[in-house]
Image (cartoon, rainbow, N blue to C red; front, top):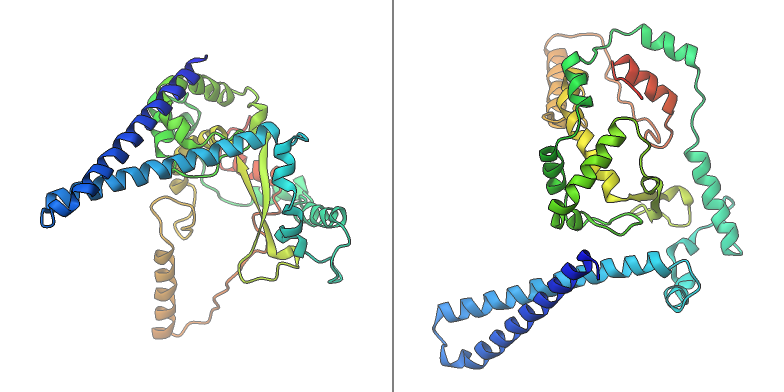
Length: 330
């Protein structure tokens, strides 16, 4: 048995012992409850034991969900009994079966519906055309702030062990993992054992090595938008679940970027900038309106909302923009 299996077995044994102990104590105190009708300490202890047992059951449920996902990864795509038990009835109850084609008619079979979904999102996510000459002319005409040598050194510095540990401990619990089925809680529990290996991997990637192929694997599913007709594919949005190690690496650099972005992004932009709040911008707008009211001024307020702003991404334009701000791209 491996070390991980040894630890898992011992933890499972400890949990069973704790559960039996709690159940026995609750049984005994429940039987004695009529002897202590006015003993608040006795009843408080009984309530505390009950809460501990409920918490133990909740954590057992979370582990069962995780095991189910792991089993799906191992057997879900093979024609086993597990596969057929999962999908025997699901085809008749899947919400995606409500989709209609572009003419408003239901699909005759699942393959046509699948093709309709793929065509829609391939079109939606297609990269816009990119004119490098026009992009260079546009960016060169702007007076943009640039990263300082200190900022660049911060972004390129090797990841330290304390930085890695702090980032992993900050990751939120009870979040769905990616295809490998390993949640943040696993990294947090076994952090002392896995930190050296993760640190070596992350610094290799930072130095220019290719990231693991597993970082390119994701779960992708469609979720219907609330209060919208599920018959229209435009009313569904894709959700992607990446492996947690890839998200930890991204979080490390998000934390670093948060330290330099305020010097690059104009104060009038509040979104995604640490320390800035949207209500502050709303107050600026109110101040402008008040000034225009007290001092009649010709002008216009223009509100723009870019459609599908996060769906159509031109990576060449993003790289050119980052370079204009002084980022050193590898």
